[in-house]
Image (cartoon, rainbow, N blue to C red; front, side, top):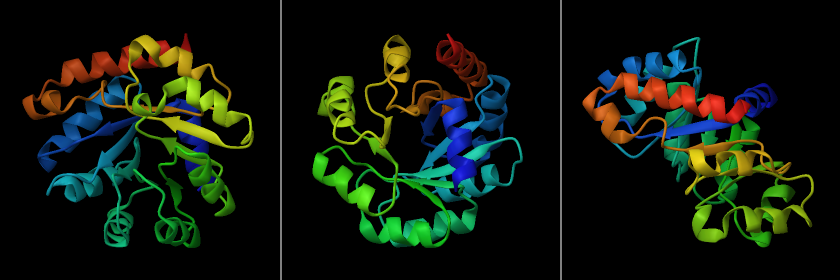
Length: 208
C-alpha cells in the first residue's frame, strides 16, 4: 500500500480513463508508457472496464488502479482483476475498511471538513478532492490544509495543463488527477500518437 502511494506521489499525475473496448487497453498503455506516464486509473463506467483493468494489471510497466468504485462488489471485482489502488468518488466507510484490511491503497473522495475528519479517523492520510473546480479548487484546498496539516489531496475535476503547476506546487497536493492526457475519444479512435504527446507534455509540465 505504502509502496503504491509512493509511486503515485513520484509521478504526481493519476490519469483517469474510460475504456469502452478492452482491445484498446494494450495500445493505450503502450502510448502512455511511451509518453513517460505509466500510471492509469481505469474508471469502472463501462461493461469492458474490468476486462481492460485485468489486462493492464498484468503488465509490469504500469501502475494500475480502479476508479469510480462505489460498492463492495465493484471493489472485490477490481481487486481480483489486479488493481493496485482504489479511487472512490465519495467517502464510504465499508469500502475503506475493506481495503485497509487487505493492505490495498484506497483514495476516497472527500471535500468537506467532516468528510476529511472521518477519513483521517479511519486511518487515511490521502483523499481525492473531487470535483475540484466545483468545490472551490486550490482556494478550498489551501483552507483545508490549515486544520488538516497531515492530509494530502488528489484534486481531480477541472485540472488541465494550464493550471497543473499551480496545484502541484501546493505542499498539500501529492498528485493531480485528470483525463486530458488520454481522452475517451482518442482511445475510441485509436489516436495513440495524441495520447503519447499529451502524456509527454504533462510530464514536462510536472517536472518544470
